[in-house]
Length: 264
Ligand code: NAD
Image 1 (spheres, helix red, strand yellow):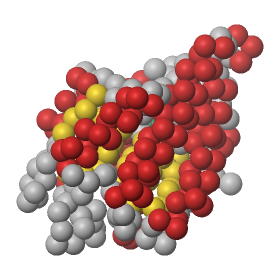
Image 2: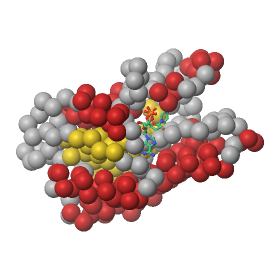
Image 3: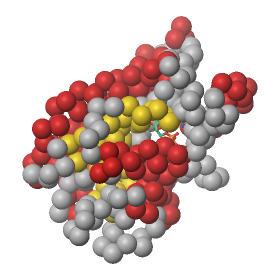
């Protein structure tokens, strides 16, 4: 694949939110994205609120291309101070802003709406939606200030943001918000050469879906036309496309990675 590298130049750093894996071998989407981008030759910054997970991901990254320099940094995406500190750390190390940013941090706090606590609604919006805003704003500001000719911002929504899901009014609202944010940012940032696109995973095998009762997983799987849950690497493939020049004429779109769940 034609790659994430700038041809003949220094390999630009990328910033990836979301982790790696939690014990036991479950592997999240963020970790798979880090691994895929590292395999393509990018220098990857693994950033996560869980620094142990970020460091585990860092240790798993291939470093076979000349000039690659990966790092791991702790960040709380819902905090402006923390996100700004992250960008400062990156610029001090790499002397340039990230050319690609994947916002994969996300949480769930599921409950039926009739019982949901206001704090659980707020927290999911803070991390999933405000965190995506803070990160997108900080990275695009740095790209514009540096005069970088191009950038690719990739947000992670969810198919649930389109179709809703029982027990997830907070999560569904946050992910619908991420899509809207991405489209608006695409319109504002295109004049700076920055593309913004969203991936919408369906049901992907990660620690997040490990929490879903087996009964629900079986029911959902029976509705997926491709007949199985997705793998984190399959979401990473879509992110790699959106990060690369293969998608240079694509901005403001959402790509569903769902095995066909909820087509139409
Ligand atoms: P995961 O739980 O494996 O990974 C989420 C990561 O986000 C964790 O490493 C966690 O530490 C990090 N994180 C949480 N809060 C944070 C914060 N405040 N600041 C920084 N980092 C924080 O889950 P995953 O399944 O890999 O999910 C990745 C993204 O994909 C999420 O945005 C999720 O909503 C989205 N998604 C997942 C699925 C799925 O089926 N797994 C489906 C649709 C969308």
